Length: 68
Image (cartoon, rainbow, N blue to C red; front, side, top):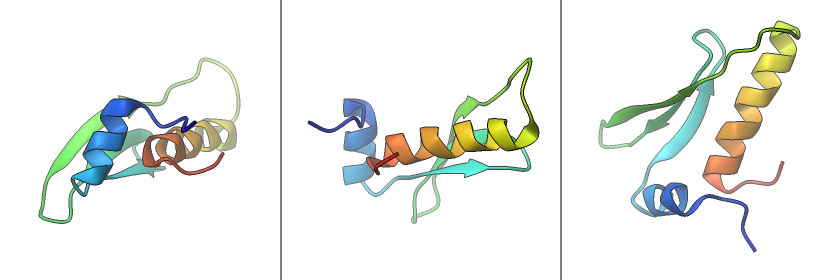
C-alpha cells in the first residue's frame, strides 16, 4: 500500500513534482509545462533549522510517493 495521498498520486500522474524549498520553507508542486502551486509552509515553534528542513523534505518525498 502506498503512503502517497490519493490527490498527490493524481497530480504526480499528471506530471507534477513536489519540492521542498529550504530558503522559503515551502513545499510546492511544480509542473514541467510551467505550473506552480504552494502546498504547505513548514514552521516549527521549537527545533533546529535542520529539523524543519528534514520535515519539509520528508513531506515532499511522501507527496512524490518516495520512501521515507
